[in-house]
Image (cartoon, rainbow, N blue to C red):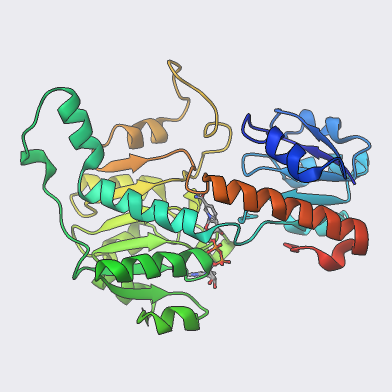
Length: 329
Ligand code: NAI
């Protein structure tokens, strides 16, 4: 296959060249895929896209005209792709599901501990030679009730870890996962989950049904003093409502690896520059908020699995067309 990889990061070329072994002809560019850069795909069969790339109907149309027949997402989530438009244009979309559920689940637990036990604040304090404890009081996961929204690969891996902490686990998912039931997870509706949980962790994909699933109304159903963890997608929560709930003293803290307007900002270095996003600025300035730049997936194992998944998709498309793909559309 003749493939172009957009948003190539410094950590990718060596790995992709090693795994490809010259089989596919691969062009790697650092440009983010946009309406402007889409013309670079002229003459390529496949586009290897990252979560920061623009795969709107407009861009897909340019790609289709350029001859692209396949998009392989270097991600599990495909919410950044207009799947309907891709189907209408005859472009197949593949993804990399389950490249490492543990990478994301472990990071979610890390965010939770860092937020609750104030590990970042403690580090900042000791760097200032302040070794006092007063600002660092936390709670325990042992005996706490943790609500998991979305119990697919990542939610289940998260449940497994939290079980080890001795937490009581509730879950909300239209599909009840036997692996979670075997772990002792109790399924219930979203409202009771929010009302009973000391911690809520989001692991559902971004879909029309999950857009702003956590909003002013659902936040008011949450226990006062609860913590919310989001390693799913930014727009699963209404960020302004999160800020308002924290300001009102209801939500105790929010730790997120994702942000609803992250495209074009996350994965870029804005050091010393002003961000043209007052909501993000506000979020960054809240002591009860911990934000990381969409790094939950970023482990050696996950990158290797993801690259292998990408080549599996390219090989399958070359051999059998759409039949062997991890199809997203
Ligand atoms: P998965 O497909 O294995 O599981 C998703 C689960 O969400 C399924 O069980 C599904 O039934 C459930 N679900 C669907 N609609 C729902 C709703 N309305 N309410 C509650 N649950 C619902 O996906 P996986 O691999 O567990 O990934 C979950 C999400 O995590 C991805 O879609 C992606 O957005 C995000 N993610 C974030 C990463 C990061 O680096 N921060 C990396 C990888 C994934």
